[in-house]
Length: 632
Image (tube, rainbow, N blue to C red; front, top):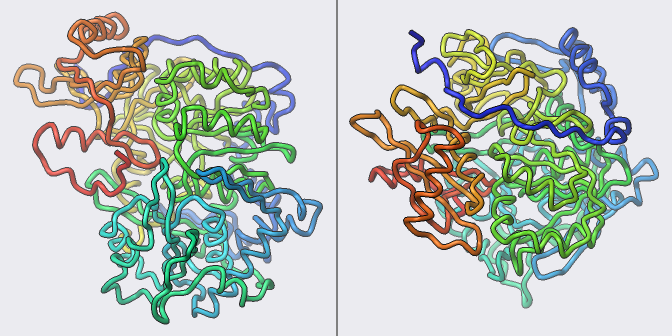
């Protein structure tokens, strides 16, 4: 008999395939996925070398890959700087006067920066950093709202060869200090305030508390947005505008080894203790460049809108670096999707002629709650490519997203992680889609589903999602904790274990079922949370759901689900039983929740992931661990 701990039971049936129009496939950068993928797998070093050759390098590489399991180095001997490829190579062409950044504040204020203007601002702040003693290898903490200066700060730090660590501006002073101390940051860049849902968030006060008693911090640079401006205290604090005004607009990009660190980004692990995931200039540049180009079919005439925050890896890879490497026009918006009303994002898409829209399943489900009237009241005909990132998108949300935007745009359902740096499993435009599936690996990526002993699972049998070969944008280590890095490659020997559970269907399409820590073990069956939640959200009344397991003397674990309803539905025992009956019909009796609790919010990270461990800890009366990443 098969050990139930070796697989995840799958109850979902195969779903309808949606085939994009032929013109979408023909105009895409990759029109024949299968041949490109097979060529990349046959000779991965030649494939990645060819991609890297599309970018500018100060010195070429002598070796594409050095793989000494589990440690990798890419483009050995090469010298580069990611900001040179984001800015300098564009300002030497007609793109000098192309719009790089369209910024919209929550209050409707706006700013437009061309590539030439962005380049000058980055050079001025980079020159200012040098006057403050920041040099190659130093660590700089960036704690800012979604304003253009956040872009400038990240790029300027990288330009001088320092290492940035962006901390989301919703974090507490304690969480910020923890990251400052771990990084031993010499400088913190912040703003006086951020704005969210009409409220002023006092960021400078948080920084003041965080840097108190932090011996490594020598300077704090402040963007002053309020009028009258807040006071700058003491020699350690500097005003952003004054620093730029007195600094040179000429600052050459530091020549960096391909393997020199670019940034650390702190992410919570299953223990709740933040870990500093480290990425480097060369390989990260190559991975984010090509995935942005191919996955979103990015062309010069596009207006690209990703709703993430640069405080998260999606913002690093697919708001800042990936789009700028491709010379894109980026729409960057401050504020919430439903403030001042649920039509905010749809209005921005209409106003700015957005062609590519990349958001989270959580945001989509949130907007579903308000019904079709908001997207229907705006002209969304400019859209041609959609995307999702974060948690697996349930088919109901996929179909709604597809329908309200005109049923003509392919949805790039992307799976990747902070650690991977770039999209790993994703459709490409023109590939047949299955709502809820991330489809196939990106060319050059070898993914599989294995049991705990490393044996491949047959189709429609769940197991651990793994990556079998190194890739350029992979994390190089966990800052100050190499043992923690090695755990990714030691859980199942010789492969990178993502910590997610998944299965492949008969067509080889990947279906992500949730985090391995969130697997539900019911009566000998192991169920992925995503499958149970998807069945519940497919009920007409449900907008969002989060499933956890609770100890049960008979079943081992009993399923409890927290449910957020769409507008117009009222919680009650009759609806509760109706939803349970729907799950029974959709998945079967094994997946029916023992408890179903209606709620108005769920604990989520700022990147939109539901923190089921927090729900479970609270339900069982346990410590929740680090909750600084939570939005709600």
